[in-house]
Length: 138
Image 1 (cartoon, rainbow, N blue to C red):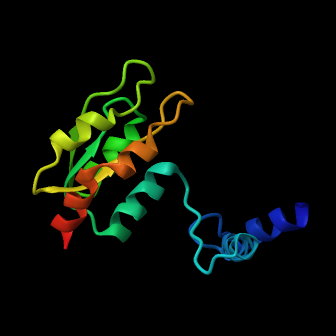
Image 2 (image 1 turned 60 degrees about the horizontal axis):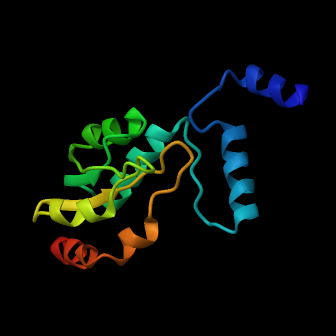
């Protein structure tokens, strides 16, 4: 362990895809059976990379009750957050409120779990509005 840390200090390369970082990504990808793995410093950056990879823009439906990164990462990537109501029992996004909020400018839905309670992913995936949403992006 100390040799690993000593090597990092000797190279003066502490962040941003140094040799140890690259080796970790490669080995982690092997363990997961994935060809592409990217380790980032925090969840905000991970969200931003996901939005960039998906080519999101326009309006994104999300919840007002979440960590600030849910909204700030959307704004940083020039998306417009559209907040919909939450369920009083879980404080997670209300699947029934999502469909009414979809417009021609809607490009995605970002639903987060809240306080250890999962949002109703199945209901969101099963909604008719998802078909309209994805057809609008084509």
